[in-house]
Structure formats: C-alpha cells, structure tokens
Length: 107
Image (cartoon, rainbow, N blue to C red; front, side):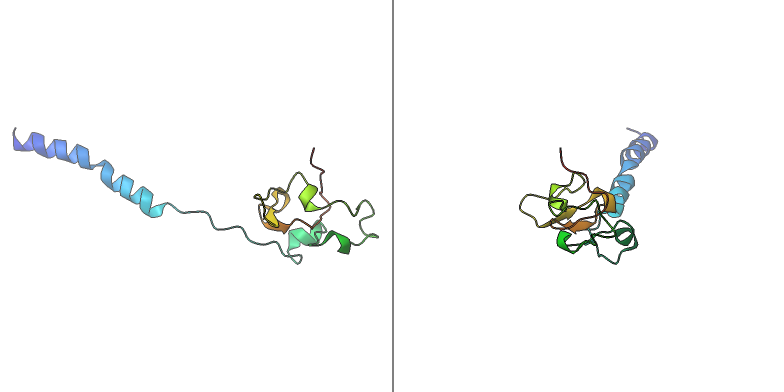
C-alpha cells in the first residue's frame, strides 16, 4: 500500500478521536439540587413555608392545614425522602411538611 493512501486512511480513522475525547472532557454532571430557603425571592413571593402550620392565615385565607407539599402534584420526592424537588421552584428541594400558594392537590 502506498504511503499517501495509508496516511489518508489513518487521518480519516483518527479524525473522530479528538471529538470523542473533547465530548467526554466537557461532559458535565448537573449540580445537586439546592434546598429552598424561605428567604428566597420566589419562595417569598409564593408564600412558601417549611411547615404548613406556620402559614399566615390572614394573608393566605385559602390555606388549609391538610395541604402539604407531600400532597401536592408539583412535589416529586424520591421514596422515603423527607425533602424533594418542586416544579414551582425550579427543582429546588422543599420539605414534605411545607406549603406555598401554588399548592395543587395530587389527583
């Protein structure tokens, strides 16, 4: 086999290697979810409390004591966890005993 053909064959075969290596080098795992603080601006705007019994009844008259994140359709915990991500807060972790004004009962 002549050297030019061998060179071109090796060039084509090795052209994808840097792309594969770069893809692995720049692949990032998503950061772990962050616990939602009651002082967070979005949490404050939605009236989030870590404990449903501490919700201001005057400010949120539609609140009922049986409404908790645990019973909310937006709350998606892993089995056996006391906290889990909430869609209303961009996946930040909320407590199962918490509440906010966008509470939606699970069907």
